Image (cartoon, rainbow, N blue to C red; front, top):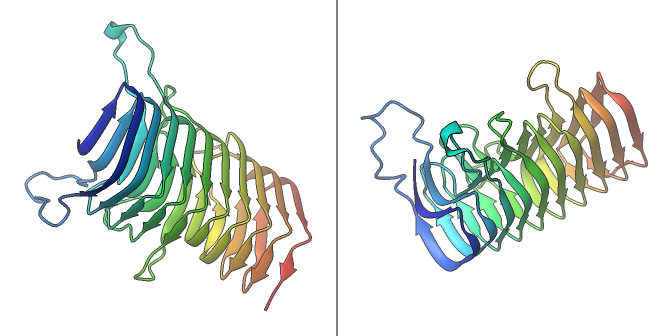
Length: 265
């Protein structure tokens, strides 16, 4: 793993006003057999009060920005430290191979007023990926994603926002999105509100065996060619949305409220 800027175990950091260009076009993909998805623009680990502002990030072999913890060995006799109070604003992230922004372990993370687009190369290829590694020391909690533009110029289907494994209290609002929002797990309350979503989908998919999504709120969105498909959800509200060439479906769910949605031309 390598990165252009590493922020490890520090506090009160601001990174602003620059351009980071990765080695996607010159990288040696053949000598080592792997996904080659570990070249990051900015790698934030076990840090607090970090602002990333007005940075252009492109052509990384992996993620534009990664936010995570710093694992500890038993001999170090310390707990894993989660990154906290991380703010990513007004960045332009594009042409990276893996994810635009990955939140692997973070609390109070705000991602806003960014433009994230044309993510393609190696899985999962999301604009924003909220995903622990199914590690008990990692958590994704209290995340706000708002006022971002997410799209793909080549018209390929893009995972706009993906949530997986031990994710709770996520608010996704006021975004312009072309692509899919995929919810694999939600420990507590994911709200998707006041977004304009085109050529995509809001879908809860079955993750690990026996998992279920809890408290999904989908309210007051404009959905164009973008269905809502809920599977294995416990407590869901789909209300006050405007649908153009879109539909709502649910299956194997508990306590689902669907009301005041409107079909528009």
